[in-house]
Image (cartoon, rainbow, N blue to C red; front, side, top):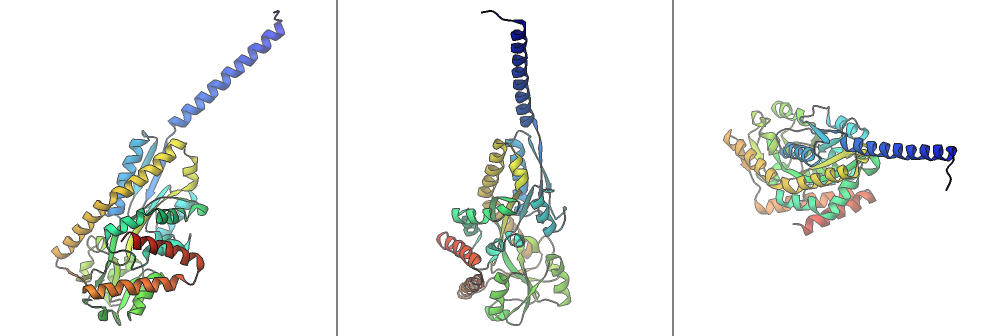
Length: 343
């Protein structure tokens, strides 16, 4: 076959082009594999189960990604207040937030369901509830259309009441002003017991107790002990309610920008961290309980029959609250059904 000069030049150009394209694609693939992705992890707490989760998650991501994901942890609200942390995670200045789901209520009101008193009996029950497939599907999917990709849900700690005068019986709630979060799921049960709920930030609780603005506050022993709440109050009544859950949310745009292998690592390491957090959370709670009594504080339990009554009152109040909105009621039924079958 005769090959003309023009044919030769055309074929040479085509070959060069193909080689160039192959090199470009190879270079692009290599660049994607070499690219480093920074993950800023924000959380409002320090030295609690959430902080331990953050450290383990960060270490696992860096190891399993071969250093392609670089995690930076910012505990104790270093990146701003909780609302600012959530906004940053939605819009991309922060890549990961580890925060109780009820604070995401501005994103979707169903996030506050996990803070409903009466759901769980103890930490082990809480971890089983968080691992329930129906609950995970519901809670981790809530922010999908608002810039969030949920990857984990776990119970951080039970709540208790810290108080100036001891609450030993349900009758002792009557007339008390008690700090809560601004959620009807938390205010309604206390109102049924004759108490006055007062919405207040955690930072304001100690001075409010000292000044008599409130008589007691709902919160976690993992906060009361290290933050020296015993300077203002001696007694803690361990109702265990509500459970403090934590949701791990990733900025969706950042997640979507990752290569498929790194997406899998982000999801799998988050799930592995959730599965492993139970014993860690339990140990931190027990150490905090011991720390409270070691410094002269008293831990109180309601009589068993009264605790059972408190749980029923709380759950009934939650059902009443959820009835006001169909989507909220449907989600509440999913969570309470899962709580019953994992009890």
